[in-house]
Image (cartoon, rainbow, N blue to C red):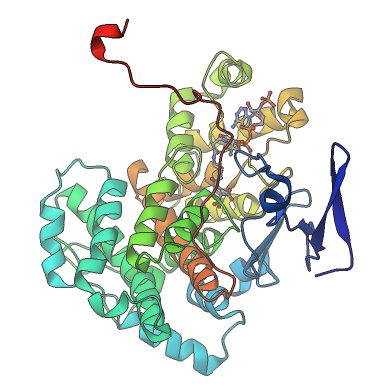
Length: 430
Ligand code: SDX
């Protein structure tokens, strides 16, 4: 609490509200007493100016294009760290010591298998089911198999559920991919690290040995880091709201996966690559840029724009570098879709419409090209995003559950419907 406060004047009345100081970014005005004191609500659809919670996990400076996880810049974590230590950092607030890292990695490794009965769940889906539909269903069903870690009031059970989800999401994601390919599931191996294990579960077949390409494993690990957490985005807010009712952690993460699927959010990586294919060649870019600016055309440049970043998304820069590394490692020197992407980025960044609205490429713009080059079908892109984001959702859910001020989320509304009226029998209607 600061000695600063904000005064709201309504008519002849003045109301003071406390201002809380942030360690970084905007301070906040606590309007918790607004309705009680003024009989009025605030109105902020889309929450463009609303802080829904206090958090110490991730900070984004949209104007400077900065992303910090517990104070560490994303480029340093992506360059010098690995995904599991980023998971530890997000969950516990500090980078792990060597011993802590070893213990955490061991605990995750020994939770990677799923209950064998869950294999039958996959059999219930059509082979052409979108893998995100499978992810929502199978992750939500974890609470049916792991009853011993659903009591959110028990810190031990919260920790076990968290580890189980971080460990099992790659296994479930790989199974969703294998199922769509009509190939047998590949079990995790304890002698592979997190990203290598995932690639092996996706691309190994029983008919021959499979060696994970270390360059691709490093790239996969870095892509997981880039997608791990991102403040109070739509899916994280969904997880927090679901968790505020006391729902079990597996159900909350399934709710986050469902929200992430939307093309305006995590589904943008799939939509961005589909858009690049629809554009096809650089000479068709002006036609699509024109459509993106046409208010009567619902078409948007997928992979561009962001609610918070009004500068380059720092993750997009690292994603672009990773894209070139992966294409180089795979000997893909002339990917026509990459040419379209780089030309589109150039055109958009020089266009007044996009400059005036601070529309820059976001993380989803280059991720699709990279993941496609690694062998993933487009429908798997958001699955990979949900795999990586699970640790962010869990860290934010854990922070909320452990917040002594936490209560069920229950927004109000601006009601503009009918005032009260009496029932009319059908004979008197029309
Ligand atoms: C993610 O929140 C997060 O942190 C999300 C995320 C995470 O890690 O969790 O970063 C992941 O979701 C990244 C965003 C992925 N989505 C896309 O790439 C889809 C395309 N982008 C747009 O749908 C849009 O930019 C949003 C949804 C990302 C942001 O929407 P906002 O903040 O509500 O912005 P807006 O729609 O109000 O746009 C402001 C203006 C509008 O024009 P005007 O009405 O002012 O004239 O910019 C225009 C919009 O029409 N605009 C675009 C555009 N994005 C915004 N015009 C063309 N193409 C676009 N992509």
